[in-house]
Amino acid sequence: MHTAHLKIAAGLLATIGCSLAAGPAPVVLGSAKTFAILANTRVFNTPTSAITGDVGVASGNISSLSNFGLVRDASQQFSTSAQVNGRVMVGTDDAPTPQLLAGAAVDMQAAFTDAMGRPGADFVGLQNGRIVGGNLVPGIYEWTTAVTIAGDITLTGSSTDTWIFQISGSFNQETNMRITLAGGALPQNVIWAIEGIVTIGANTLLQGNILATGNVEVGANAVHNGCIYALTTVELNMATISCPGGRRGASPADDDIHTGMCRNFNSNSVCDRVCDCRVRKFECFDSRR
Image 1: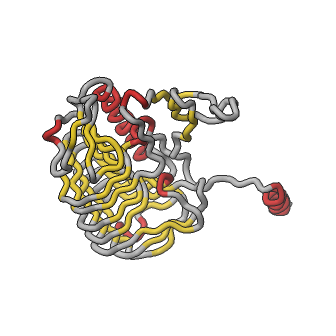
Image 2 (image 1 turned 90 degrees about the vertical axis):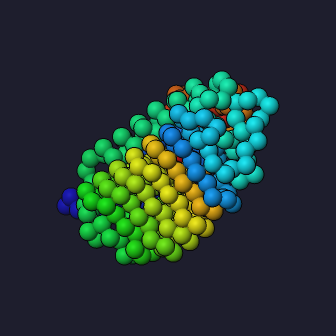
């Protein structure tokens, strides 16, 4: 009897077009979400890389960025690079950049803590940490060991579904291995929380945001659809990094980022979720992505 009721309820939901997200609640990146790469200490680069989104070193100076061909902006608040579609910022830039970076670093740490601490893993120790292929549905995946991507995998789900990968060890994606999305899944809804170093091999494809306590190394000609957040150092080697939904103003002062309820400029309606609001244009962004 109960089964019949569940089937009827499911049918009604399908009839009215209600769509429920699968997987855990999204991880909020806060003010860190505008950064394609955010590191605490240093970002090394072997040209030529292509980065979409801001690049920041929270506690470093201009020498903390290597081989970007930086050009200082007249405002002294950031630099530009032919390899970066966004701003390049360090902790010694003029105000308000240091405050922006400090806030982003706090949000980066909070996002990592949140992602690693999510309870109720749906899959524990999948393939003993050596993933040789397969289709991964939305959910929380937990490993207490290092993880190696040794085969192509696909993340299949809708645009509202979420994946969180909790790895208590290093992460290695072997050369030429590909992680792809299917069914409308979005890279901003994929989180790799890694308590260790990260090695992304040459000629690979990776989807999702990386939150790592150790160094992150991206190999030659790797393509990463997502953002990289490292509590230490990031190293790039002719890599392509695209941060989905990254928001870039003309200068750090143009961001005016606040978290809370905000009004949409076009409809003047209160957003139904916590969002990041760019005050000057009153645009509402979903901070879950």
